[in-house]
Length: 64
Image 1: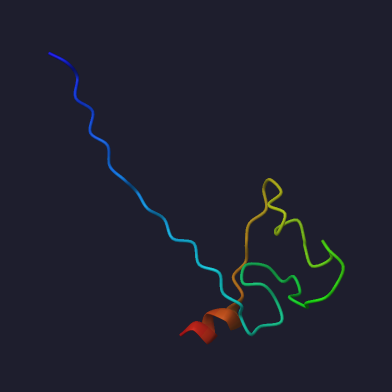
Image 2: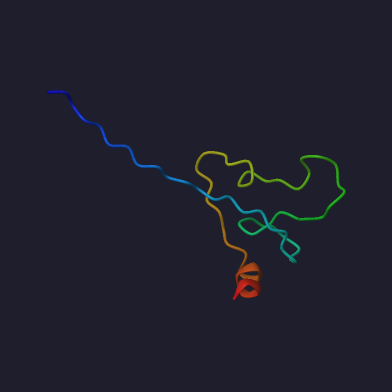
């Protein structure tokens, strides 16, 4: 007798949206378009170890 393995598929969905806020949803970084590359980033945006995101309350209010 052989061993029978069961596999289950998991499908993820990634959604991109542009918010009408002056900062990003999980950090206080600016969303100004047209600046030089890598200007609107912080250690949280770069996902440095030990950094935790902080939710943008205005973005949450807009979604409600």
